[in-house]
Structure formats: C-alpha cells, structure tokens
Length: 305
Image (cartoon, rainbow, N blue to C red; front, side, top):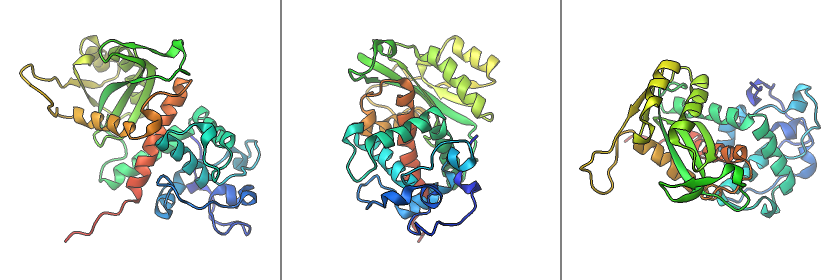
C-alpha cells in the first residue's frame, strides 16, 4: 500500500505559502500559480482539510523515480471531479484547470497504480467512523445496473441485456449498509449476475475479511449461495419480491444498493458508459464516490436543540 500525506512531515515551501499540497511544498506547482475555485465540484477548505491526509504520496517524493509534479494536487482532484460530475469530454476541460492531457495523465496514473481505490477506501473508512460504525463492514448488498454504451465502447466489452433491453455494459457492485462502495466490476451487459458475482464477491472478501453477510435479489439464487458459503464463508441472503406485490415497493436492504445506483446517475459521466476500457469505467465510479464522501466528511451536523 502506498504512503499517504499523513506520513509526510509537516512544513511548507517558502515559495507557496498559499497551498499545502505536496506538489506545491516540494514540487514545481508554484510555477503554474493557483486558480480561483468557482465550480460546485471544487473542494471547500473544509473538504480539503478532511481529504488531504488521505492522499497518496507521489513516487518522486519517495525516491521511486519521476519528475516533481508541476500541478497542484488539490486542483487535479477538482479537475477530475468536474469531469465526472459534469460529463464533459477530456479535451473540453475548462481553461482554468491544467491542460487536459495532464489531468488525464493524473487520472491514468491513479487508475493503473490502484491509487484511486486506496484513496476511496480510506475515505470510506473515515465516513464510517464519523457515522459511528467500525471502519470494516460485516454486511453488504450486491446488485447490478445495465447502462447504454457510447460508440467508443468496443464489441469485446459490450453486450445486450435481454432483461433490461440495454445494449452496453453492466455495473456489478457491492455496497455496505450505508450505501458506500465496497467493490465494483464492469462487464458486458450480457454477462450474468451470478457469473460476475462469483468473481466480484471473491475480490471483495479478499479485502474485507470481516464481511459475513450479503443481501441480494432473486437473480443471485442457485449454486452461487452454496459457493459463497463453502468457498468464501459468506452468507448470501436472498430478498425476494412477493408475488402479490403491485407497483413500487421498497424491499428490505435492497433499497440501499438502488440508492447507490441512483447516486451514480447524478454524475453525468456515468449516465452512459463513455469509457473505452472497463478499468476506466470502474475508476470513474470510484471517483464519483470520492466526491460524495468528501462532502459527507466535511459536513457539519446541526446542533441539537
């Protein structure tokens, strides 16, 4: 696991007293100045103070090679959050952010080295602690969401979901009981839920060793239940819709993951799958969740009367 800002000694560069990110303190970000924060996705000072200790330390600062970064880390986070939330193209990045290719290089580096997942997981732990929960969950909910794919998505990673009548990709996700993401896998839309769940649940239980119960809908019945119990020591509980139910009915536990998918639909980049690679599609989901959790961490609870 990478080192994070919390492991770096406090201090500031005399060149940049206005920003305390590592690119300003020890890199070359001072050469590019600072930008005015003007978009709804820009972090407030309270949000930055909450997430700053959780950011990964750059390789060049730890002697692992590379050039000192030339752009502010806070600005880079704001740029990626802007793209995910507003659904813009990389080349249409507003001019007050760093050049689009530098922002994409930042996004790609965090994707390839797993830094976005580590950053996301540390944020989730802090949000759970703030809610009075243990950082590691013991229960979760699994489900899938099919979304249409853009023309850039190749035939090797797209398919047709006959149940939802969607030509595109499918997002398989496991969330905790707060609706926070534990693991996600993007596949072609014609991939079966049980087939994907075998792989995804194995990945999730490898990371979250305390996970012992997962709720699912009727699409996850069959041999998957026995497989989870025998191979993963995981109880897969099926929450079924009664045959006599009519119209919309809130089902126990399943509404949690549905709320998670509803949140993804509020990020315009995720309304349709625009990514050439499934790894990028998964990274976009993690970035969307970091924006949500950053706001939750900085939110102050109203004083009780």
